[in-house]
Length: 257
Ligand SMILES: [Zn+2]
Image (tube, rainbow, N blue to C red; front, side, top):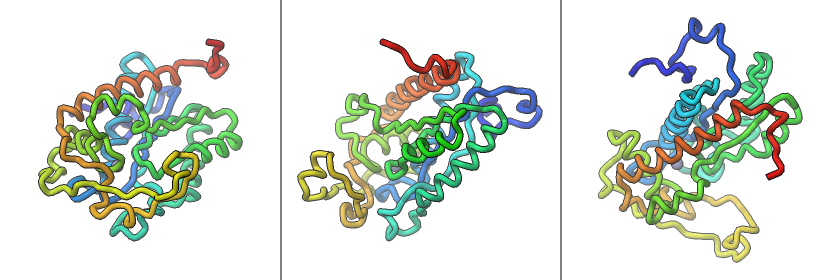
């Protein structure tokens, strides 16, 4: 595959040194078990692919964007006892983000969008704090799994290694997916408390108390075709957002309509 000029890991100083960028894109995943059948890198593969595909869309429309290498570890505090799930604490994440933003800021790249692929990562409070520290920066987070159209593309999308994620991986990295006959059913328990079921109370789930196979959601109806269809929607939808953020002046971010 030829060098993609909007992917920092692939391009070079010769191409970069005289270029100006409006927007940096940071894919952020996790390293964790995904039922029996998906690789530990699932969230990294997804974050990388989505960042690259969406950046391509924005780049081809003329936006000056650059995708940074993915951060492979996420917040896995609730999975501390799942073998080789590697946890980065939120305080570590904000330290990493601070240093990346500091570099961008010193080099006049004033917009950063995180493409997050892991439910345990929540950057919003960090972006508030870092926004105060770097007022010239525009900082945003994209959580692709919150895109509502997901229910139109899958019968039972699932939360973790279910139909949606398995379909994405069957499309992106089929060679790393075990036959679905070897997958667990992803049956998961819920908190018994009404407030949590209604969504107005929250507490972290202890993963091993919730699921036996580490999955949440049944992957049995996953297909590569469903994955391809959904990811193309994501490339376009997220790509459009990246394009808009990159080309819009900060003074024009808010509108009356
Ligand atoms: Zn995942």
